[in-house]
Image (cartoon, rainbow, N blue to C red):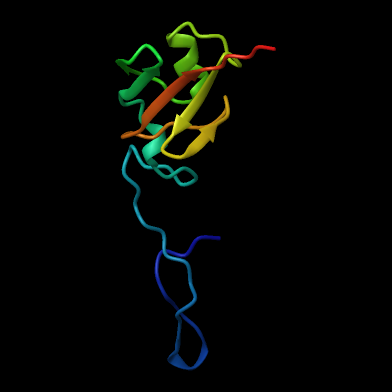
Length: 106
């Protein structure tokens, strides 16, 4: 039961632990809070060894980024700062990503 304000109980005291219902805006959600990951802002990508810099729009995860660049996962290392990222890692608004080609030989 949701109480719309403090209720009065015996002896004229009020129940301060009563839940108060607050109006929500049309865009807010009770369960989800906006995060910087939720936006699909442009991500700056540095391609090495080509030395090219590309801006990719609407990339929410690393897998989305690789798909838009038409790069097969596993053929590049995806680096943000000093950290390697996996395909399911989320990208944030101001990320600068580096893609390094993986080369093996024997």
